Image (cartoon, rainbow, N blue to C red):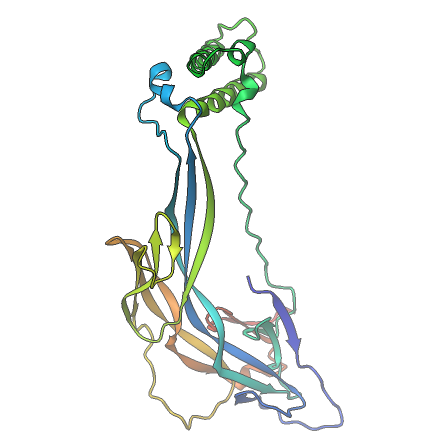
Length: 352
């Protein structure tokens, strides 16, 4: 989330007599004593790919899994591979160097009372700093690792004369754990607790012991996740452009690396905004804002659509202006803009 900073051009000199009309000029103006410069954003399409790197380590008794526990298909060799987990698309706003505006300070207007993002994108007019809600995303909890299975070895297991004998005794320990759990569930155990929380704690501990010992036969798979982002700046329709590639051995790789299978992006302008004729002589008045268009974005991999959606794109929209009369100081008007698109969200009367 973009951090917000407030820029207020509220310097009034009683010795000067200034006109009431808001004056907005396109482009960065140098040498202006009073005023605020703001920028409107352009859109980039951000593709976020989450890939999981999985490492399988066979268990110490893997070759005895079928003999003693009737577990079939256990892999005997280590394996390291990547899986494509999630693919998400979103619009992000970045400053557009072709849409920079300067609002000159006048004594009878609140138009220069701008709230901007740290990148100078317009966010609000005449809105007190700190009044906008800030949301904090919850953090995902990490998965707890299993204890070392050797912590549950009995003396008989430790002094076993061979690996095969150790595997047999560990398998018997697993069966014993299962019998204890079943006895607790049926209420047949000698020390079955009457308290429900205590019973749950005992059952959970038995489950952890069993799962830990089973890793000696089934092996363990550890996983780490990585996020990769690719940004596209749309200027026109795109058909099946290779934006990156994916390999089960290497993960997400560059689009020109033929070691992976291509991930395609298609983008189509939905033409939701009727664009007015270009008038280079049009006078710039009032506060400029974007009316974003929309684009349909489709991501394909291995012949399948893995994600699709409609996203706002400012390049497919138009530029409009709020009337200067809205920002007369007596009207107490507030305006809120979307810093991602530069679009107008709301114009309202300021609370007194």
